[in-house]
Amino acid sequence: MPEFDLTRHETFRHWTPVTIRYSDQDAMAHVNNTAIATYVESARTAFIYDLIQRGGVEGMEFILARMTIDYLAEFHYPGAVDVGARLIRFGTKSIGTGYGIFNGETCVATSECVNVFYDMGSRKTLVPPDSVREALEAELSA
Image 1 (cartoon, helix red, strand yellow):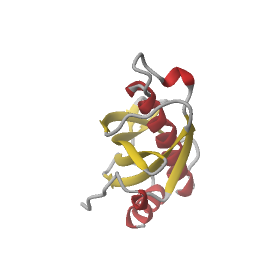
Image 2 (tube, rainbow, N blue to C red):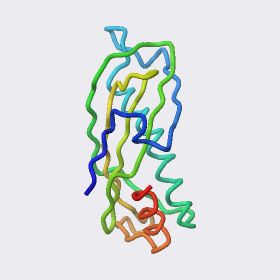
Image 3 (tube, helix red, strand yellow):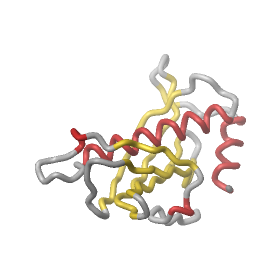
Image 4 (cartoon, rainbow, N blue to C red):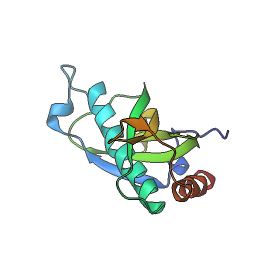
């Protein structure tokens, strides 16, 4: 499995800009850890929905099974961050994604997530169709 340096801009091809809200600050006047999790969520959902749509599937859902965040530097309101997203691995029913949160040129946090493909009707995990797996393979090799 290849290793990806999530602290480097060139690791990512997919970006989600996020505006830092005043309410994202904590009592120490820096962006709080819970806000960083929502920044990752914005990038994660956009990225995974795009992968599924590239596979020609509408309405397939996924659930978050695991999320880790490494906090690297503090940053402050006002401003914006850019969240880079990339596929880092995939299995039979799950995918691993990686994120870098950048405030300007500085990587302020990284995150890795595991999501599981899911059928909301049956409330069970599912194997994505071959078309989605092909999109995942193409993305991983890019």
